[in-house]
Amino acid sequence: MPLLPTMLLFSLSPLAHATDLEWSGHYRARGLIYDSLSLSDSNSQAEGTSNLVDHRLRLGPRWYISERVAIFAQLDALNLEPWGASEEYWEDPVTGEQTYLAYSDTVVSPTTDEGASLPSSLALTRAWGEVYTDVGRLRFGRVPLHWGAGIYLNDGLAPDAEYGDTADRIQFTSRVGVMYLMGAWDVQHEGYLNDPDDMQSLNLAVAYRTEAAGIGLYNSYRYQPSQGFNAYTGDLWLRAELGAANLEAEVVGVYGSGNLESGANDIRISALGAMVNAQLRTGRIALGIEGGLATGDSDPDDENIHTFTFDRDHNLTLLLFEEPLPRLEAQTANETNEGLELDAVRTGEGIRNALYLRPHVGYEFLTGLQGDLSLFVAQAAKLPEEESEMKGYGIEIDANVSYDPYEHFTLSGTLGLLLPGKYFTEYQDDDFGADFNQPALGGRLIGTVWF
Image (cartoon, rainbow, N blue to C red; front, top):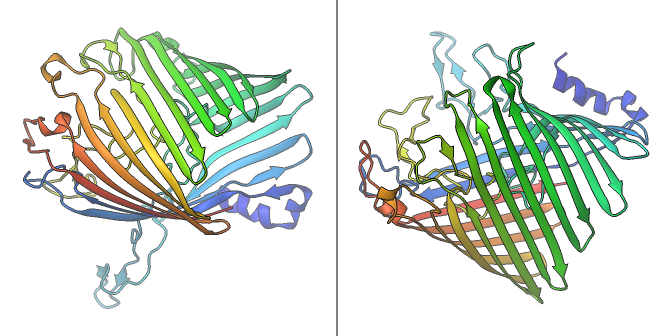
């Protein structure tokens, strides 16, 4: 019997009574509409209005086998699967021809050419065991990773997240007085057996945490002996609650050298990322501002790498650094390109090579009904000399509304307007031309049932 059905059957069978089983998770339906991610209405391949609705069901079963031992898992079903995908076809009983859409009212689980369900239908994303000893907690398996504000490591468990950081890891966490100590060993890439080509890392963290404050330092040393590659990442995080005010900050530095399996040799890495977020709440009004830096590179083609990229699930906007820009239509649509041309893209998912500022103001209209208006301004931290006058990414204005009419149900919506800066408007591509100077509009609606 396949593994996943077996696990689900076990969780519902009388044998499961030997353990305490708890569930958490959510189902999310998300609708997106854009006009236009091409940032142009005159480019010959501008796509105009685009829209998408997708699913995600996330389940987090936890089996407490005893007071000391537990198993955790994460199951993702129809993960980012578009509505209307994998429609069932109708086969003419006389000719044997397969006809889609015209006679079909049913969508089915996506399948491979051999008929097996694709991983997007139901995937075991994470699974790990935990043992609670007298001196600390042992965790081992495929585990989610999160640290601080999430600009370096982000578990992606929020309903609006799409990715999530995961490691095959052995980890031990212990508390010494008011301090927490964590040590871990990860395997990022398994190469050939009996060959020192695995990418691995050693991790050590120390933190002080209370309900009102926290400070911690995360250290990671990554190495691949066969390539002579090694890199150190240090991440300092702090948080403080001062009455009605909250402050959170995180600074990440990456330093390393060696060769890459892609063929780049003698590379040297020196990159920095940082953010500060301050918020003040008084009555129904909430004020906040976040500023950040992700270093860039004046020569992206040499052996020195200085560009830092925030984790893709550190979500601050609807358009800029959330969607590839500018996105064009493919001249010939097929299953490989899905009708998109991305070779003209200047920015993608994740804040990188940027200085940004995001002030915002929120208001609680009624119990369970909140609104928020934000302004996101960003420019490139470093560009090649010939582009030094094109640093401005632009300005994005986002209006957010969240409504919680019932327990375990949330409906949230966002409208966004991006006014592109010189980084786009003065860009000319040898193959795709120019005229990337039009504002982009976007809308998002998310309905979430969570438990």
